Length: 429
Image 1: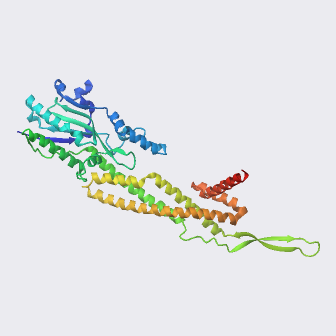
Image 2 (image 1 turned 90 degrees about the vertical axis):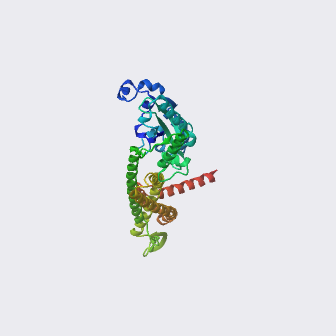
Image 3 (image 1 turned 180 degrees about the vertical axis):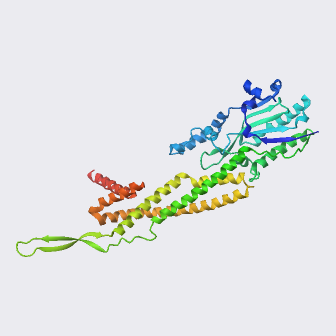
């Protein structure tokens, strides 16, 4: 005796009401292939609420994630709804497992044998697959041949970005079984489960009948792949934009130190009148220095560039662009190994990201230098301009406000005033 073995992914066709036979009368009419007189013979092995399962698996890690978020728009209110609305991740997975075909089931004994095989295979399924959380499992005996609908949520852990635990089929199965082929984890996992079914058949004296390829192409997987390709294209566009922004900022930064050496000192003339004779004219140095408009313009450009770099760097820190691309590359690598063109695009993107990381690292060093420059410039500018300092601050504030950048120059002034006020209060005390 021989029987075929089939394990197919059917996530895009999931209908729990259909699986559990809780359909309305109209729905039953549309499923005329079901012999409802035999529905009592179905075996309902697991029936859990999917939303409750999500709460059990992700409730605590979701709370931990939200507690770390300083911005409300980064918090996730409901992880179930979050995944449900995702275009990249399926809410759950469904497998249809079957042994034998139409011609193998003539008597009740044939049905019972198939049920025994499916039950034995399922008995230790969760032990073999601790990362696949089953919420529904049923064996249908009221259709042309007995088969099992198995629904589960794949749970992977160890994420550094987002929730510590997340829904991911490929990562879940590779974490629980490190021997799986990373380039085709589902195919490898599926083949191991099919081999187990084949072993159970042999123990009952039944040979596995090969009826062609059991490969099953999931439409969702195809869509995910296309979405990932689009995301890579978008990411490459973002990298180009980021480089352009960095070039524009760098153009404002002087290549060498600004020479603020004044060519002359400010002279104050005093006239003393006399009753007899010519008045005395005395010229004295005021201690101030005279600077050219070009030097003042250079100073303003330096301050503007400094605050622009600082603001852009802080914005880069909040976008998590590099980390998002890293996670994206990992998913693309697992799902599209055989797509050589996509691989080339991914490698290219990784080089661009590495370059961007280097740019950001350089910017960190440069920002620290600019901060010190601003502090020194502030002190010396105040000494140089004295009475004109307030007007000078006003000019800088007006221009930076128009450009919408953070005024570090004004911050330095307020910091000094606050420090002096604090010292004054201590003296009074």
